[in-house]
Amino acid sequence: MSEQIEKVRRALVGRVVSDKMQNTVTVLVERRVKHELYGKVITRSAKYHAHVETGVAAAGDLVEIEECRPISKTKSWRVAKVLEKARVI
Image (cartoon, rainbow, N blue to C red; front, side, top):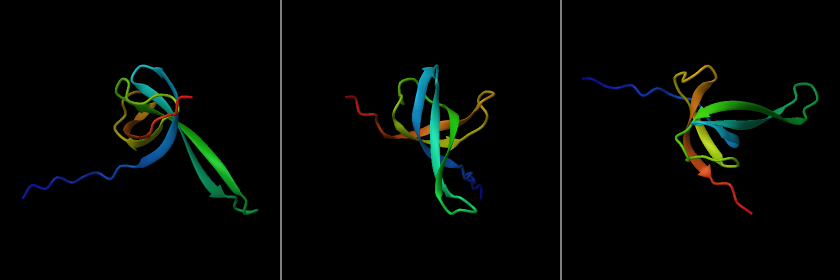
């Protein structure tokens, strides 16, 4: 039997902070960790460049990104889905 094995890909949820590039958005991912010594909860953040089709995600949107093959020097993630669109006031 020929079974195709599905690769387990890392997925992160973050907010789009920039969409000024072509087919690329910058996603800010925040995680909360407890300080080793003092026990205070700290927010750690990281920015990832993610590949997106034109017009799918804009600044302020909450998106899920998943790991993929390297697309460019800084892009190894792609937008899997838009979870929440930004509210326009």
